[in-house]
Amino acid sequence: MSEAKGRQVPNWFWIVAILAMLWEAVGCYFYLMQVRMGPAELSALPKAQADAFAGMATWQWSVFAIAVWSGLAGAVALLARSRWAIPLLAVSLIAAIIQYGYTFAATPILSTMPVAEAVPLPAAVIVIGALLVWFASSARRKGWLR
Image 1 (cartoon, helix red, strand yellow):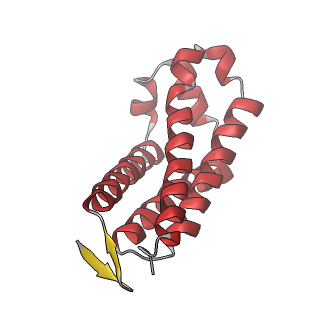
Image 2: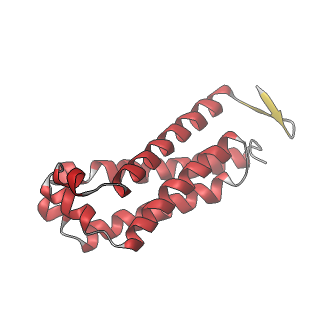
């Protein structure tokens, strides 16, 4: 176990922090893959999904970028045991809520895609994001973050 300000950090903290970093890195990978999609890649997708990507405004791509990159920075901050993990992960969560909230409220995605296909990933992203904010806040209260 490591020491910081006299507080021991349990081994499971490192496991959660590493899993958080991997989760956030996967989000960054998907962002990069989607932002780089050209006509050939779009044509290989189901029509509803291709239309959703093609119709995304610049601000939506920006919010997506903020969500994934601030999430990765927050996970790295967790590994560094930095108090910055909390605001970075919170920004990521807020951006994800904005991104998916807009997608479901203002686009026809649910009318073109079955709910069972459209909802699980956004729901997982938001739930895991909220859990990571809670985890970082709890770690801060316990003195594990500085």
